[in-house]
Length: 576
Image (cartoon, rainbow, N blue to C red; front, side, top):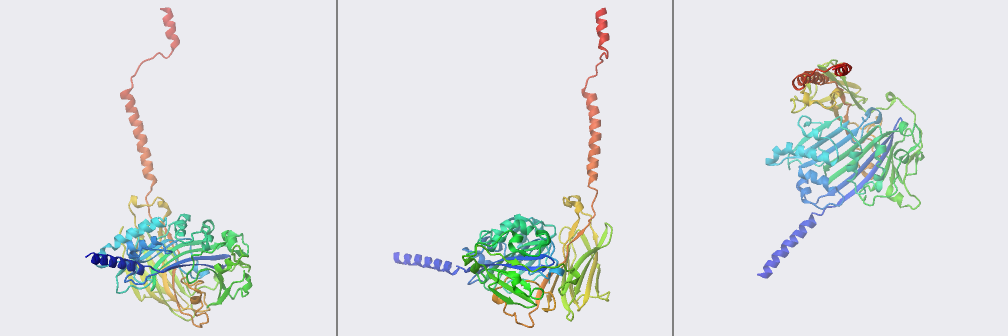
């Protein structure tokens, strides 16, 4: 009997040990900094910190994260956040400024102005009705984790679910669990060092070693454009998390127009210690992406790279392995210097990307207004299918019957597909998605009108006279890879050197999926005269003060007769 009980206990213990051993997952971390000269005095800094976590056996990524509790490098707070609210994939961006895709090319990871959060939430069986509650709690948790005031995204009046524009970027979970997309944008969300501090604390080496040493918040936020990004998604091997920071610094302001520049001159910091935990596929690297046409001399960038690769579209990649370079005892730090000069070139003369989009406002008055989205296909020979997503706040009631599509000289063009959802006051915004084929060398003009709603007095923001923001239009398409066109200056994701150079000699590179954002518009919404209550209060209080003061004096004070001339009183007393 004793041996039987002992055998049972030993078996349970061994099963527990084996179960925990199986759940031990492999993790790795890599970091990269991509530098590029965008022309006209703008310098691009792309910080990328990539975490991967391999899961050996899982049916669903979120369930696997909830059962694996041991973490070495992968931030456990992000994993717990996704597991608690059943989020299989999410993307958070906090951006300040506007990415000028007409002059700089397409961004590697596009970001709109302000804050954007979109996530795929799972719902299984009877839990499908909890999607909205999970979304609200998830937004609140993200807001607290990154010190961002994005709680307004949790309401249905801001969030929406596009049908075509946003697709999963991670591993597809088709057939395992249904997922629901939620997208929310806040244009006037401010970005400051309070957002960068909790973001940088997720790094294994923080700001003490590796590329994290270059994260000078003062210099990075004092730029023409900067963006803090968090991208979490499942992969075929497990989980992937990418923390990215993008900055475009105007050297005309930062260096008073000096032609030569370096990492230290713009960020006031240099890499002096390698991050020993960056042992992933790419390790710790500094990459310089330059065009071979305007500056074919490789010596224009100093020091000499350890390796260089010729990429497609006339690009050259200079590879600086920070770990190997800092192992050299003669080098205390690594700094890359650019010595080639630059000249100012008007935007009209730049080699623009194949598709350019812009958005502007039409109409006058405080009752109605209109919006025009202009999209140009500048490809010389290929038509491009574009998906247009327009989100209109419920405060601006979109008039669907005024929608007009003008394609070249065709004033009554029809879209291939249309998906429209009317707004409901204080419940949801209006959503319009169009699938349109734009022929080569043709411009598409999409216009509609809206009426401005007069909201309740307690629904106005503190700065009601500032106006109401209209989110940017989202344009999605597959860009043909053509060496004669200005395609994205950076790869879509952080890739290894082998993946970057796998097809460097290919004559026909693969097409690239591009999502770009137009400008956000500021609409002058109707509002009452907020000074009138103040004036009424002042007038009423003044009348009450005068009336009540007079009545108080009559009712409470005693009237007495006094001699106005004291001398007469004294004379009378002496005469008596």
